[in-house]
Length: 213
Image (tube, rainbow, N blue to C red; front, side, top):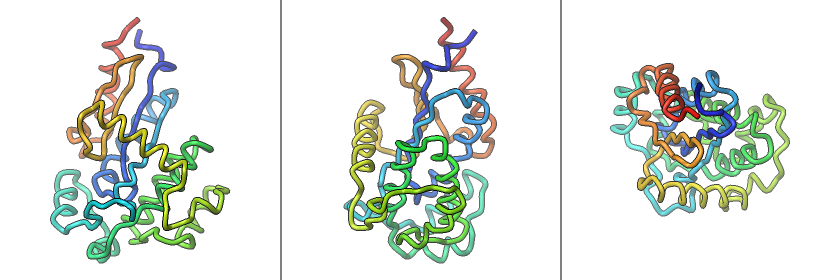
């Protein structure tokens, strides 16, 4: 018998505009399909927010590295945008709102945003670029979500949660997948599973079995 799933949480620290996060999202999909009872927390780090002082561009080399290590291909439309600055402010606002207000739709929303950005080359930097996604998922976010010059209060609070969790795991690298079982926090090495997302389910199962009660 494994640990009660009511005591298990899965945290995904990511940025909607981060190619590594895009490559790791299928792992979250597989875990969620196998264990829908596990509480899923999608925490947008807003690394590519316009307010972040870090370099917010992505190099061709980094994209090539993701393609090789994850065995995926980015679209030509996306690659044509690489010289442009990334700005995930609106996506961070929208995802934070969804995570807090309608969590069952947070993962479908993240997948839709990533599809728009990485497959269609949509920069997701203005409100109109979200219209189709919001309509398709039948979402009703407040207008404050689309203030491009600032993170919403919800987003800022989640970013602070991300910082605190990153201090605990002693790394600011994204993406990060963490399994919390009771009081123990386990960092799942997503790099092992990028080419075989289904295999991470076995890793989660092993961790759950370690925590038999």
